[in-house]
Length: 607
Image (cartoon, rainbow, N blue to C red; front, side, top):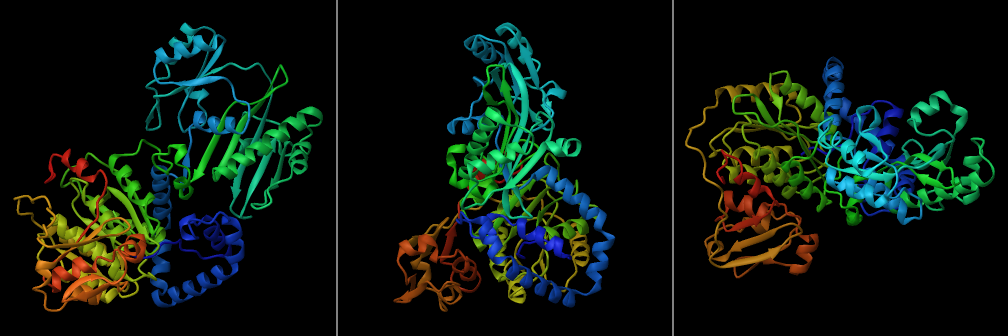
C-alpha cells in the first residue's frame, strides 16, 4: 500500500522527520546511523520538499482544509496510538539493564529477581542484610505507588513483597520483584546517554543531583547539569568525560570515579545500540564506592535482531502485555526487513455488530486521516496496522491474514496517504490471496493510491468478485471521506449467509515443482501446468526468475538464489495463475502461531 512517512510543512518538521526515521528506512545493517543521516540530510530534504510541492499541487486546498478541521482529532488519535503502541524502541527492565552494566564492570547492588514472596524470603536470607524490594515494571514513580519497599529481615521482606506482587501498574500486573542489598547512600547523581535527534548524535548528560527525573533537575538546577555530544566513530575521550563531571562542580577522586562510570556507560550504550541508557541515581556509599542504584535502558527496535542475548520478546514499548496477535505480527516483522509491517491490537472482546473494524493503513499521517474518516461514521478501530516502505506482497498478505483473525469485526478498511511511490499491484495481490483464502465474509474497502493504481484496483476488484462479501478498491483521487461513506453503505447493506465458511486447505500437488523463498515456498503442480494455455505465471513474474521447460514453469536461477531473495514473493505465480491460468501455482507463506491462535477462537473455522 502507500509508502510511509510523516506529512511535514515546515523546516523544523522536516528535520524532525529526518531524525526520527527508523533504521529500517536508512539501511538496516548500517552501524553508522548518524553519519548516514548527516551525509544525506540535504538531499533528502530537497527531494521531500519537491515531492510535497507536487503533492499539494495535485491534491489542492481540500486536503489542507480537511487536515485543519480534523487536527485536534488527529492529535488525540496519535496520542491514543502512542499510549497503546509506545515508541520505536524496546525497553529493558531494571534487572536486565543492570546485568548489562555489570558486564562492563559497573558496580550494582547484590541481589536477584524473585517471582514469588517465597523467593523474596529466600533471597533476603542469602543476602543476610537489610534489603530493598523493587517492583519490575516499565514505569516511573514506583515508590509513590508502593512499588518500592524496605525490609530488615527475611520475614519482613516476605510480608512487604506480598503488597507488591499482583499490584496493577497501568495495564501491567507485577510478577517480578528485584531484591537487593540496601546501600548506605551518602550522595546521589544522574548519568545518561540519549539520542539527540536534532544533532544526530548521542548525548552524554550528567548531573550532580540525582534521584529525581532529569527534566525536573534541568528546570530547577540548570547549573548542576552538563552535556557533551559523543562522536559515533571516535567516541568521547576520558578527559572530556571527566570535564563534563567537573562542570557540575565535582572534583578530586569523585570526579575520577564518576568519569570512569560514565565511560563504561557509553560503551554499554554503543554495544547494545541504545536509544537511551540512564543510571538514576548513581550513588556514592559511605565506604566510598560508586554504584548504579537504578537504571533504564531502551534499545532501538530495529537493532534488537542483532542482540538475541537480550531476550526481547517484542521490540515495542507497550502500555500493556502484548496480545497473541501482537506477538504473531511482530514475529513476521522481525525476520523480514523488506518494508514495514506494524500491527497493534487496540481492542478485543467485542462481538459482531459492535461496529469494530479491521484497519489497514499505510503511512502514519494518511492512516490518521483514514481512521478519522471511519470514526466519523461511528466505527471503532479494533487494530492499527501499517504496511509501508515498499513491502513485498507476502508481507501485505500476512498483515491481512492477521487482521482477519480478529473475531467479530464488521468490516475491513484500508487506506493510507493516497500517494505512494511503490507499485500498488504488489499490495493488491497480497490482499487478494488473503481474502480468497479466508473467503472473506465482511465488506472490504481499500484505497490503493499511487503507482500502477489502475492495475492494483483492477486486481483487487476483479479477482474477488466471487467472494461472499463485496471488495471495493479506490484510487488517489477518491477521497478518504468518500471511501468511508462507501464502506458504511456496504456494511449496512451486507447480509451474511449464516452458513459459516470452511477452513482454507492448501491444494495438493500431484507432480510438484518447488523452491524456497525468503519466508515461504513456491510450488507448481506440473500436471496442472500442462493444461495451461498462456503460461501467465512466467509473464507476470515481477523479478523475471521463471522460464519454460517443455511448457512447464521452472526457475531460470538457482534455488539458492531464489531463497536468498531473488524471488521477491510478488505472488503473481499464484494470484495471476488462479485468475488467468490453469491454477497450478501456490505460494505457502506460514504465519507462526496464527493457526494455534485461531483454533482457540470459538467462531473460527479452525476451532
